[in-house]
Amino acid sequence: MDFYQGFAIIIALALPHVLAQSTKDSPPKSTPVSPTTLGNYSDENSTEISSGGIFVRVLGQSGKILMGRTRNPSEDPNRLMVDFDAISELDKDGDVIGKSGRVKHSFNTFASQSFTFSNITDDQYQNLSAKRLDFVANITSVGAILTVQMYLFEEGGNITQGDEVSQVSEGTLKFNIMIENWSFCGPNGDTCKQGQTNYEGKFIDFIIAIKGKKAGQERSGEKKRRTNAQEYDMGGDATVVLSGKARYDDSSEYENLPSGFPKMNTQGSKQLFVFRFRKFNSSVFYDPQLDLGSSNDTGTDLKVGEFTAKILGRSGKMTIGRGANPVTDADRIQVTFDEIKEIDSSGAAVGISGATKHTFNTFASLDFNFSSIRDDTFGGLSAKRVDFSASIGSVSALLTVNVYIFKEKGEINVDGEKSSVQIGSVKFNIQLVGWDFCGNPGITCDKVGKNEIGDGIQFVISVQGKGSAQKRPDNDRNKRTDGDEYEMGGNAALILSKKISVDGGNYTDMTSGYPKLEMTGGQQKFVFRFPKFTKSVLYDPQILFSSTNPNGFNVVTSSLSLLITCLMLYITMVFH
Image 1 (tube, rainbow, N blue to C red):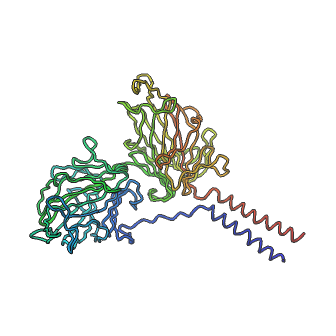
Image 2 (cartoon, rainbow, N blue to C red; image 1 turned 45 degrees about the horizontal axis):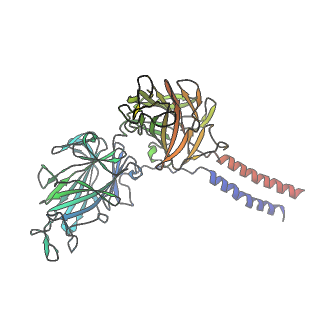
Image 3 (tube, one colour; image 1 turned 45 degrees about the vertical axis):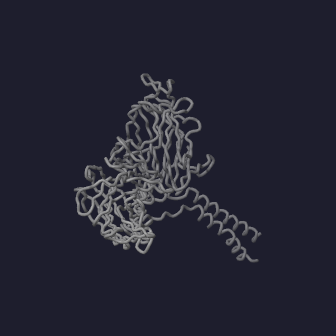
């Protein structure tokens, strides 16, 4: 074997290892998110309208409606989905008729029903501006036309149906259901016969399935926010408003639906809403309403380069990712302020009940006020900054979050704890000021005759990334902080300091064992424990997006070193 043959063998053996390591540890190339054209869903023959950050998509084959806050609403965990489930003709006793025979009057599915769409137009509904889209299907066996008129409101106000009043906001969806020219079973219509019995149609049941983040719960009394009609809480701040009235034929007057309707039934995993209409001559008109809530009403976006931090004004939820709308980034990180509770010396929650609560399981009802966005520095590095704050009235506290998105990369140092930052890294400082602890002078927290004493605060955030959180070991040479680092998937990481500042003083270590990760109901919750304070406590986590994998350079370098070493050994063998 001559020199060149040996050289070729060395290259053949070592080079695949270099390339494999380089490919394995290089960051995945992010696919740019291209803007979706309204109605451009060729696989489903569907269309879409949007207003105020709400997107509504309708499938042409079945009329299914998807409503969410993302360009593709099916990606929104708080989406609402509406399926037209069934339409049935009934006799005077409420029994379904026309289920069989040559001419059917009852249908258990709309899956094969094709809808055609109108153009999207600017319109008004009771003097309120809205985007409008109609879609229509022919129900040929009964000579009927089913039309759905969708109005997506562009401004808020009140609408009425008879004596019912409902509040709408920008992004509220009203979809009017109209059935025309239905040929009922009976003497003056179709003959519907089973055995020797002729049936006469007296009603139509129209059934839709609505699915939200949770099973719908009917609101009553003061819990109703938007209407004096029926209202259902569907989870994720979404609601469904169901009128108890319909219009028939050419009348402009609303009539009550038959007694007991609308009603909700559960069938397997589906939640069905049933509307019953009396027999009509030419048409019936009915109009439900969907709303995703006000969690997106006020907020702000903080942008640097390709990165954006979107903060919601109701709840303070943050979404961090690439692009103008980070919610559409598959690698996004979502941070939810989940709960805050006062604890005693054993770690048990105190002030759970009573007139003055000290423990809160959600931030959803907190309205945050925002500062203006400004240029600032943190640790000597330039950044954009916005602050948002909310009062927690029952404990006389102020929660403030300072959000920094860095414009340059470098290193920050918090009391000797060093962390790397990249362009687009987000640091958010959490500060609590002025908490009235149980047991403080004049503050009594009574639980079954026992006075509770507050000894600290437990603050919990949920963080969702592309993958499950994986903690880097402290001896990992690629770890980018002296604190805790969690890989969140999608080349993103959560960096958690172990330091807190109490009452404006020097930083100290957090309680032993904290911060820590807990899994609750499939959610990744990060728990921070703060000691009792007199004035304030400050804590600052960080979200880090890497444009390159921190392992990549070292892995490729070591692999190239292996190749060069092999070559040098071979040359030495040949010439000696």
